[in-house]
Image (tube, rainbow, N blue to C red; front, side, top):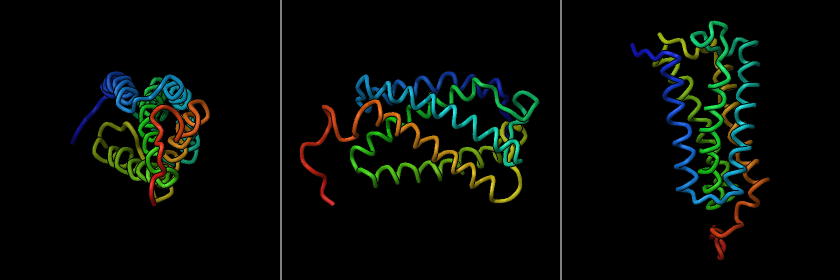
Length: 179
């Protein structure tokens, strides 16, 4: 069985999250306003993640036994998850620019599926590590999927509010997209 300690997980996240944000900012060709939107979105993502985790722990949907011995994750984990969420929001912004509302729906559906693979699949693959433990039934999994949708939608909203409409700016199309 695979084992990963909380310290190892934080070390990996401390390297991957900022690198991911930088690469996404560069390759999406985001301007300063879009990056600022992604940073604000990252803060929103962290706050939403924290709120969902508090509710989930109280309702027995999921917890993090290995982290602090309390069933809760450290604030550092929320910060790193927010940085990664902000990075992914920049990709979502590019998808929304290209495919409009259909792209946003597809992007959020992707995160619904990702929640199952990342959180539920990861909790099974690293079960002995007890980094995340789900409660019984389908409701905890459904709540986890909803958390990912709300968190990622918040990042897109922040980018939209701070960076302006998805189809504006120097990278905007000058001709409409057919279909």
